[in-house]
Image 1 (cartoon, helix red, strand yellow):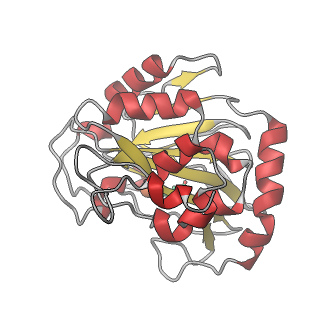
Image 2 (tube, helix red, strand yellow):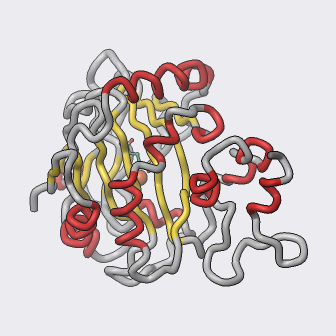
Image 3 (cartoon, rainbow, N blue to C red):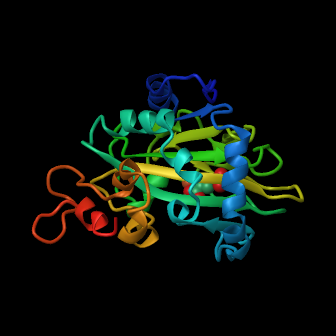
Length: 268
Ligand SMILES: O=C(O)CCC(=O)C(=O)O
Ligand SMILES: [Fe+2]
């Protein structure tokens, strides 16, 4: 199966359908280069200060820089891009009543980095065996640099979202999600994929934003990454998307059944 590709005018419904069919899709050139320049320059000092990963999964030549909502205002446009958020919601809200941001992370695969093992992102929930076609997560990877086969473009197996769980596919079964700066790869939490091998002398930098059903614990703790006093300065819809809202009827209240946004309003 091929990796479905769309132009920037794609509808979120068409992208969502491709995610249901293939588990992955690329939207070429969705963000302008100027926006990627701004995101890159706002985050560069943080990437520079980030240590390498400590194991093979996080990558000993790879840097993972989080808290992107607090650290880069321009990044907000990526995290809340209507086509991407619309597609993720369309897929996740087939079963869940609401969706949240699950994590925000620059993934900077350094020169000569080994490939990451092929995995499903939904294994983060303690390997809970979600039934096939019950999608609880949509991951996205925006290209901050071009993604090439040589510099470690994300490896994907289109169609593998319907495979059995807990497989260990070979690298040879994967294809590279080649894309230019400003493009975005979307993939379900059930898709087998992994970071590629970087045989070049420069970094491959992606902006990873994952979305998940609001009834699941977030991988990046958004209330620590973006506490109420900072959430007060961001767009209220984005504050709700990172978790300052109820997920379904009862989840996420504080105090005397108060709405989480009341904690944010105090700082306005
Ligand atoms: O860096 C990439 O291309 C993919 C990273 C990834 O899949 C992960 O860290 O879960
Ligand atoms: Fe992953």
